[in-house]
Image (cartoon, rainbow, N blue to C red; front, side, top):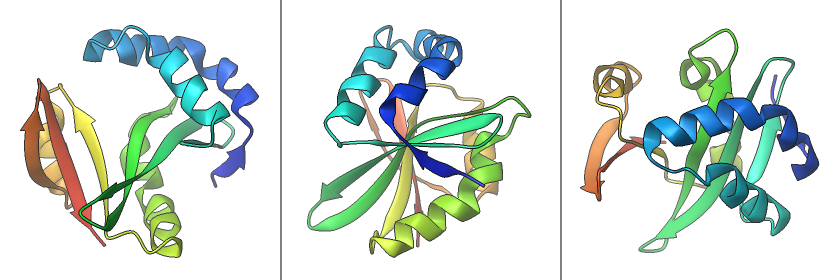
Length: 131
């Protein structure tokens, strides 16, 4: 089960975040996440071998929980933690959960989990699942 952690715990996940940032074309992802966590604009949740960074957003007065980055040594971080992320999002009355990706391989995966293609911005596809 994921637990909220202080941002200092993020350093344990430097290598996976750097790898994800590189694949997505965001080379300074770690420093962006550290800044957001330190300023309470994002929140780190971890368990023994995975983590996710959630970032609350607002769009047209709708609350959105964005999964900024997720990783699990077991694989399938999104599928594994989606039920708990949904519960957390409902606690703050969010209308949906979203994530951004440049990886086309995630298209079928996102659809299978119930996400809908919201739109494309820059090179990123934004996927949302309504709550």
